[in-house]
Image (cartoon, rainbow over all chains, first blue to last red; front, side, top):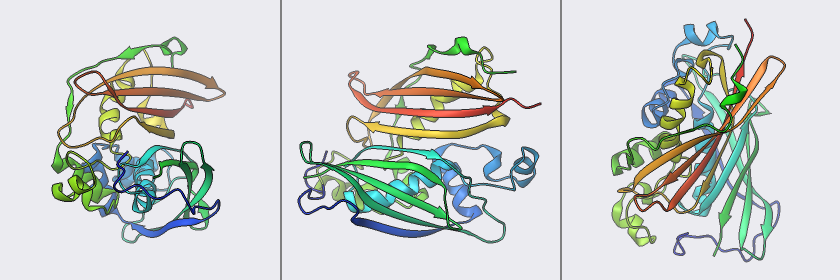
Length: 143
Length: 148
């Protein structure tokens, strides 16, 4: 979409890791995301409400996790070059207070389309050794 | 009460258009740890070929979720928001969103499926600019538990 900052298609290999990141979600992270996104569902800041609906406590917004995963792809792809991004929310991430939830993200080449010079980047997002997002796939238009 | 299967095919909006601001893009980029200067500095964004600050990949959710609220609020659809879990999400960008964009959104209920004690509602938000040109498509599925 922006030719100036798009990654080069040539030389990419399936399975190649293009970016990794480890992030810590705290209640502060959740409150910031709530404000920035406008998603004020109380299960993301209020323990009483969260436990009353059967959750172990306050959980991270799925969209915070997805947004962070997109940021990891963007770090390699350049902003604006992720033309499609999808995921399923497989498991919630409980965020303690006090404390933090440490999330590990890895973005790797899943598929290459020579014709459109598009790379599918698969993002693995793990919390306590388990995947929290399923089928987290980004399409990146390359130069 | 289960989600009304006849809600499938309904559409809402467009309502008041959403004006994308530099401040909101910066705030959202900070919240999702999007580190590019093209989200923060206009000169950096222009150097990369954008007219203004470019929005992070999932920024469109800010616009789409405002409209999805109309679905959740519609008593004839029957979504109990206290029993909702976000099941999946997909963004398809027809062009990057930049600060200064004025975006009108139409939301469609594409699919309602009830199976056992869970209903799923899939919505599709079509974001368009002031000329009516498509900007982004946002698909979102909510799972609604129907237990007592």
